[in-house]
Image 1 (tube, rainbow, N blue to C red):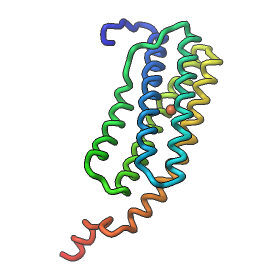
Image 2 (cartoon, rainbow, N blue to C red; image 1 turned 120 degrees about the vertical axis):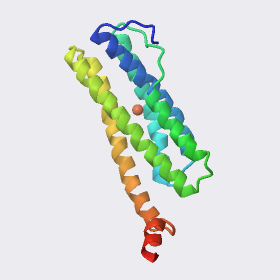
Image 3 (spheres, rainbow, N blue to C red; image 1 turned 90 degrees about the vertical axis):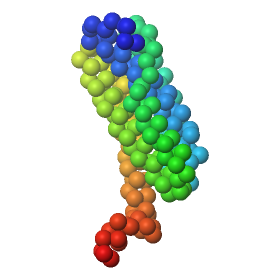
Image 4 (cartoon, rainbow, N blue to C red; image 1 turned 30 degrees about the vertical axis):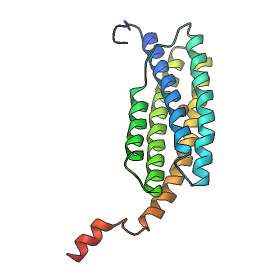
Length: 179
Ligand SMILES: [Fe+2]
């Protein structure tokens, strides 16, 4: 992709749409794998539902690219890929179920913030270019990401409180108090 010449704001818009389109596909993979890693029923259901939403979001992004009379650039979303790799590092470290669940939630929160940042910028650009219909489609994605973030944040709070109450959660503080 380094060889593709990008000169106009529209080129960048298409590039960013392509990047987030790739990101959605990576997120679908990540969510499907993560469903099998957690026991929390609300979290499991949230991951399942959001995988479905993410497929729909990818289709909306494709629609926007078509509306612009363009083709998606063959890019891979490095940020989403990196978040997925970070989660896989935890998976490979023989984690306890609680640690794994915590890592899934942390990964989901970071992914949502990434997507929210991406769609916020894209909605603004579409509006600035007078692409009302494109802006609406991107706004729908943004709305869904924000709802998902709220849901994940609630679960994260629950899990953090549970983890803090577990033996060993505060090992460093206990060690320094007894010295
Ligand atoms: Fe998404």
